[in-house]
Length: 393
Ligand SMILES: Cc1cc2nc3c(=O)[nH]c(=O)nc-3n(C[C@H](O)[C@H](O)[C@H](O)COP(=O)(O)OP(=O)(O)OC[C@H]3O[C@@H](n4cnc5c(N)ncnc54)[C@H](O)[C@@H]3O)c2cc1C
Image (cartoon, rainbow, N blue to C red; front, top):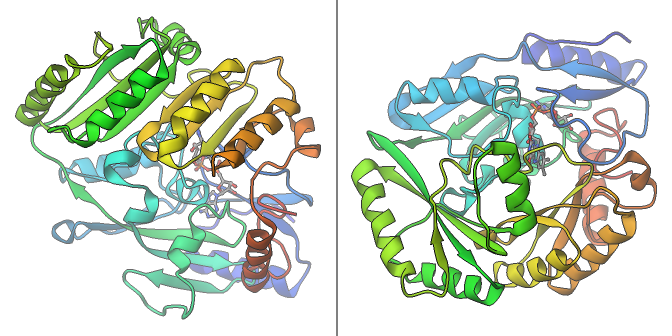
C-alpha cells in the first residue's frame, strides 16, 4: 500500500475504514518525524501516514483563551499564532520547528517549566482522532459526541500513536504579561545536601520559580561545550527560572539572590537561556528518563552520578534525564532501573542502540498496567494497525 497524506480527518477516516475492511496493512503515523526512534521497535512492516497537510488553525476564540488546531501543525507555527495575541501554551518542546501538535501529545513531551505550569494533561481540553477501525471520535472540549467511560483526551496523551491518529487538538492557553520577561539564576554546590537545603528553601521563598533544574558537572561540561559558554565549575548546579513582567522578574531575581546569601552555595553567573539550550545538547547514543517522587530525586542523582551518567533533573517534579557514557552496556540501565524502583520510581529508555532493545524493556510498566493497556488497545485498534508494537508487543 502506498504512503498516505490525508488533507482532512474525513479522508483519513475513510482510508482507515477501507483498510480495516480490506487488507489490514499496518501504519506508522508521522508528524515532524523527529522522534520516530523513541519507544519499542515496530513489530510489523508499516507504511507511513503523514500528518503534514493537517496543519490549519480550526478555531481561535482568543477571549475564551482556547485554540483548536490540526495535529500536523508545528509547535513553532502554533507559538507564532498565539504570540500574535500575546498568549502561549507553556510547554517546552525541544525542536519546535519540526515537532508537531500530534507528536508532542503522542509522546507526552514536557520540559523544565512543568514545575510552574504543569504538563500537556493540564492544557489539552479536547481532541478529534481516528481509531484503527477508521472511526472518528471527539472527546473533551467542543464535544460533538463524547465517549462515555473513558477520558479519551488523557488516554491519548503519551499513547505513542498506538490507539488512534490525533487529527485536531483543543488547548486552553495562557495570556502573557507585557512585556514578557524571563531569567535564570544559578547557584553551585559542592555536595547534594547543600542542594537539598536550597530546594527546601524554595518552598518558603517569596519567589515563584517556574523551573528548578539540578545538573551534575558532567552534564554542565557537555552543555558548556555545545553552547560555547561557561556553565558551572562546581560538582552540582541548580538553575532556577523566573518569568513574568519585567518588573516582577527583576524583583524576584534580586529576592532570590538575597535568600541564597544564607545558603552554603556559590551564586554563579546567571545563564543566558538554559531552557532553549536543549538537553542533551548533542544527540547521544543512550538516554534514560526516570520519574521519581520529588523527595527521592537527589538520592537517585547521587547514585547515577557515581556511575558516570550526565544528569539533568527537573528536580521539583522528580524527573531525571540521564545521558549514559558511550561505552556503557545494557547492564547499566538495569542497575539504574533497580535503583529507580527501590526509590519508588520508573525508568524509561529514551534512546539506545537498537540491539539493546532485544534484552531491555524500553518502557517500565507493571504487568497489571500492561494488561489494562492491551485491553484498551483491543477496543480502539483491534487489528493492531496503528504503530504496532511501539508501546508493547
Ligand atoms: C520522552 C521523550 C523525551 C524527548 N526528549 C527530547 C530531547 O531532549 N531533545 C529533542 O530534541 N527531542 C526530544 N524528544 C523528541 C521531541 O519531543 C519530538 O520532537 C516531538 O515530541 C515529536 O514530534 P513529531 O511531530 O516530530 O513526532 P514524530 O516523530 O513524527 O512522531 C513521534 C511519535 O508520535 C506518533 N505521532 C505523531 N503524530 C501523531 C498523531 N497526529 N497522532 C497519533 N500519533 C502521532 C508517531 O507515530 C511516533 O510514535 C523527546 C521525546 C520523548 C518521547
